[in-house]
Image (cartoon, rainbow, N blue to C red; front, side):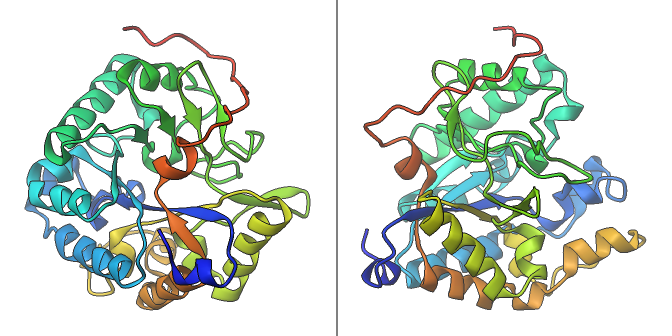
Length: 302
């Protein structure tokens, strides 16, 4: 697909990804919002995803939508619109439960049910998965085997940074094979000052000046000749979303900082880089990915 960024000489195509979950499903809000209360909350996912689809169409850009099965069941036409407009529908699991909170049998059920729901709605194979809150790490590497057995071909579930809620700072920074049929495509980082710094979206993109994020992504493209992975959530463009009462100050800051500036920054990002779908960038290649298999802590039972 031709894009304005391509015409300015951006030779590397980066992966644009959207984690399709609503504001009340954010992991940091779990202590404040009971899962049983989700159906009683105002759901704003449809209007926000439609705004994103319009933005992508304006920039002639395709993306990957990592979507919750919970959302897909309640908004089936939204999933069909995503697919019909040429975007990849991928899995974010069913109920936005961190992998670290699930036993293997429960994880297997979660990823299989989400895959089936999404495939039935979009009419295409769902090959990609992203763990909620990047919750695959050293303690649950068995999840990769579960994903392979369920028919997924890639995961984008590891964030090679140090963080208080997630992260695997010693993990490989770029796409690599973790078993015979599955590759892991980690969230993009940039090594500086002896550690990996986040360079791929989320709250960091809203917090840092846009020029800093642009510089980091360009450095990954030019110095390392690698495709970057950028992610954001539909609620991040929604400055009118209901405010959650009683949350601690750190959670409040992380969730709401610069939300009113997010949409304009995304327009700049789509203008300044070339973007595409995860499956097109990482699965459609002639050269096999190098193996870097982790040591599995235990096998996933079929």
